[in-house]
Length: 154
Image 1 (cartoon, helix red, strand yellow):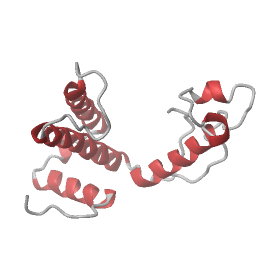
Image 2 (cartoon, one colour; image 1 turned 180 degrees about the vertical axis):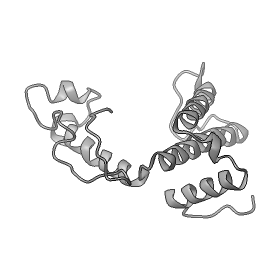
Image 3 (spheres, one colour; image 1 turned 90 degrees about the horizontal axis):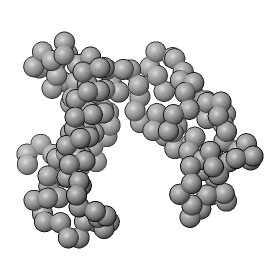
């Protein structure tokens, strides 16, 4: 496919999505709510690919090339809507993701959770390592307007 770039960044995708919407005069339709609902719809389409298959091996060795290509298209739809939603909401998605990885490293310390699938609330019960309160001391706003988020959602 022409125009496919190697090493594409979230910033590249953000700009391409913004330009795509602007060229079509779609900004008027790209409210956070509408983008979220579109994203959820795409996640549903992605889920349908795996529905009724049972467990699937890593690397999808039993899948046909066409099935993998379809999966790539649906994963891309999810990614593109997520990038667009974060842009419209003024969230630096790359920074938010890196911060979340830092928070998760605190919630799930290797010495307490290696090899375990337990939720952090089960692992940290009575330990207070990485307990609530906004991410165990990780600071730095991910929001372009300078706001902070006090939720501790996973």
